[in-house]
Length: 261
Image 1 (tube, rainbow, N blue to C red):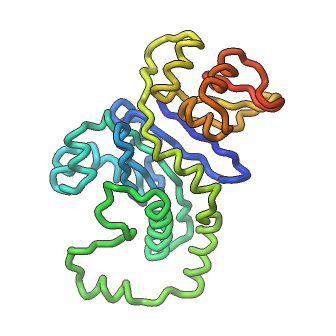
Image 2: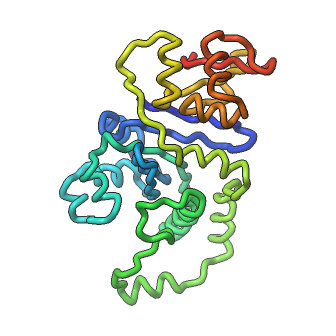
Image 3: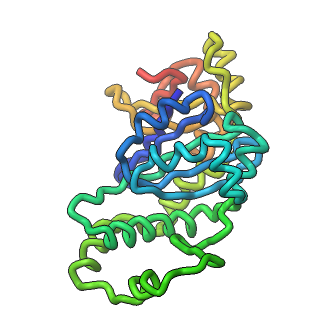
């Protein structure tokens, strides 16, 4: 089951798409991201360890992570972890889709690496061996590729990249929102039917999403668990659970629910 964390759009103008079970949602992951460019995140749900990557075609790149032979050939931290723990132990997050329309190959590469570096610095992923986006330390480069890297970027290229990177500032608000991805909440069993009360208890321990609506029915926030909701609203877990179960209005503006309308 795919979930989308919709943060306050006035603070963070993007949606973060989360596939909670990378094994069960494999076909969905590959089909929904076909031909799309972006930044992805593997999260080991139990430990909270992260891996950030990027791709011009996400589906094509992510398909490699489901190939045992490719994982063995890569033989890096994330490949070993996927082989050792299995895809069920991981969630996959699409941090951001990138528009590369009208960009040259070099401009596309520079833009993607700039975005990827942003998330490296923000999330500090443990599974990434190199902490510099696009880095290939230890790999031999041809003289031709070295020459390409040394070429100065044109003013036009810099302007395109600068425009595309607008909004990716390391503000305290952005860091606080993105830090939710580091929380090692466990995936719930979506196949079971539960009462509102039992689902509330499960959400505290396993991470069932909490949906926050305005009085007019507009969905304003979605959080992965009662505890994360409590941190955002600066309220205790029992207070959040109370309002979820009762359906009462919180602070005269919000209605909390376990169900997406």
